[in-house]
Image 1 (cartoon, rainbow, N blue to C red):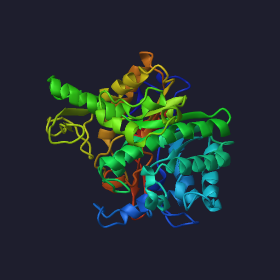
Image 2: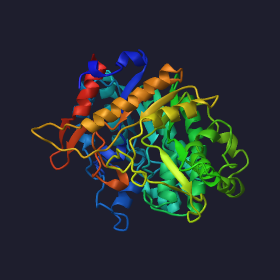
Image 3: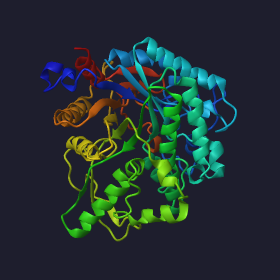
Image 4: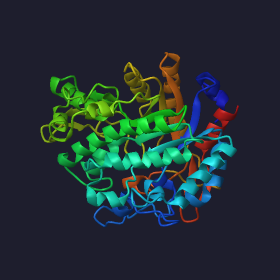
Length: 452
């Protein structure tokens, strides 16, 4: 689809607007026992028969560890000039703390150097869900010591790469790795219960602030952010109960990690269960440690949530009304509603915070069934998805909201956590048995958009 058929061009977003594609270490690297890498909680989780829904794992994944140069060539060929990737904690510190694995550092050194040599700006995520397994026996994110462990990791990474990397993100979607891994048990490490979730949340909130301060200290002129899952939340009806249910879900889903970092504390009025953090897990001065003046906030939006009151869902007394129940016209392979205006709504919502300086869309994308025909992957639904969501990003920018960049999720098909390899989000198709890459129609669409 040529750019001339679009209601916008890249120039409409401004000369300084950042265009990139995003990935995460465990989802693409493979090489899970190569060059001294230690085990992460996702290695253990995906090899545990209790949790192996699709019997998939990231042992090989996309072989990015071996193929990073050719993959970066593909990224650049699509017109992107920024690459978001994460650092595998257990590849750098196999035991979580202490001994540094020099081959692990060397891999990321080569990756960063290759990016820079190609004119690609590296954007580094410090933590994208792959806690070293060595910490799980000690409680993982429920153990307050994780603040010290994480601080050591950030010190190590920023001292190693801070002279080359200027764009840093502290955490990736802390709501998802705490709720999925420590409340619902559907993500690593597979733990359940409010008594796991609440301390994990609190320690992640503090790590957000501490991580930002370490980067600021070690990396001159760094651009520092953190990334947050976000979704517009709407009540199913305008009944008082549904409206209050939506407010509770909004507090837990959208406000839980941004407001402590801004010095606003936890949204306990709308979500009273969070009071337990303050009474059971918080020490004196913790809320001050949570505060950090981020240069940008990364928003990651895929869908909206429509919720209703529900007496049978403890703690939140709310449940989602699924897209299929609402007879939504377009649903992705993840059973998520395609709702482009949602990305505009979350930009507007987060821009309302006085101290949010800039917003970067650090993830946005869609999974649809992809098939190879005559050596091509024609993913017209994904092309339409990006066109419609980017139109809403541009709308926000034209209305004066401070939106500075957009990262497509994802550069390539990869291991999609609890969903395994079934859903494909990539701009590049990966044939997993052969590791063959094919740039999809959506990747060609970005090339047309970004190179004209």
